[in-house]
Structure formats: C-alpha cells, structure tokens
Length: 114
Length: 111
Image (cartoon, rainbow over all chains, first blue to last red; front, side, top):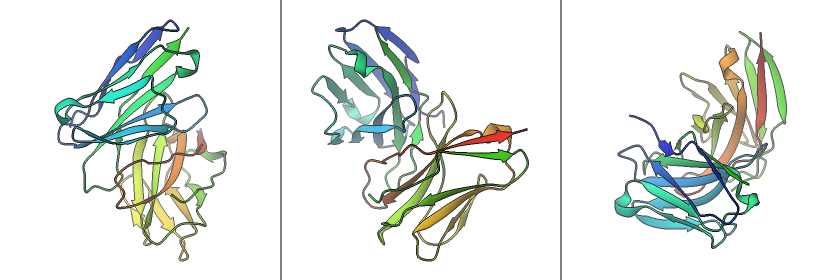
C-alpha cells in the first residue's frame, strides 16, 4: 500500500491559465474522489468516480472544472481559465467499494492563482 | 446527511485522554458516525466509525449515546502528534459517494 499520490504538490499560475492535477489512487481502490479545501474550512466535495464512471458532481463545480479517470486508474482534474477564487488545496481520495466511507486521502495539490 | 455540531477548539495535556464531542441530533437509523482528522498540511485521515455500538481500534474509541444523537471520540493518551482538526461526519452507510465535512474541532495537545 503506497498510499494516494498527488502531483504536483504545489502549483502557482496566473489568472486565465489552465492547470491540470493528477491523482494516483491506491491500486485496488475502485472509487476516487476530488475535494477542495480553503483555509480554515473543511474539505468540500467536488466529484466522485466509481471505476471510470463519474457518478456524482457537485453543483458548486463550475463548467471550468473537468475531471477524468480513464480506464478506472489515475485521475486528472483540469481547471480552465483559472480565477483567483480557485486558489485552494485540491485533495484526492480513494476507497474500496464495500468498505463504507473509509477514504484514504492524498496530501493534496496547493494551487495559488496570481 | 445529518448535520453535526462540534466545538471549534479544545485543549488537552499530553498523556491525558482527549474527549471530543459531536452532536448529531437529526441522525437517521441507517446513518453511521465517522471521525477523520487532518494534521496541518496533510490530507484527512480516517480514524474510526460506528453505527450504534461503541467501537475501539488502535487509534481511538468511539462512544455513541443510546439515542444516537451524540457521540464522543476518545484519544486515550494524547500525544503532541495528535494535534489536528478532528471532523465528525454522519453518513448513510450504503450511499457510496460524498462525505460532507464541517469545520471540525481544532485539538491542541500541550506539553
């Protein structure tokens, strides 16, 4: 068990640029989640995959955000035309169906939009 | 999902038990109580969960009241490394999707 891996750990970008983050879940886990966290707040759900299917997406997620999980393995989260309000920690988690809500989180990608 | 209420902060002396309360008065019969913690600059970490019976593992104990409207997470011998934000989450066990995090309790363990 090598844990959930996220890349990069930090990303600084200028407003209007596109950014992409990668998440590698624990290998046997079929569920993958993306969360966003701002300072002083708890993590906020963005989207959820079971295998390669995106089963749920937060209504708070704007059209500038897109996530994929090809072949049900790693996942990418892309933010197009970044805004300063997108600055946050982006967390990925994975779990195994049948283990309830025991999620394993990565260390996150800290995004700063200048 | 049922809403939870936690104190924003608590202090505990190193080596003593830390008792973190959580109110979830609107919990439904099929909803579990989950606890996660988040150490600074890391992702949340699962601690324990339960439905109605008390639970214990290597990290903590979870005490759920008989009416299930509140629970307490107990760290029996707190260490400085237990300083973290602790989240109490109530979630239906069969849903398979999102966990809704509140603002949690900032536990500070003092030497």
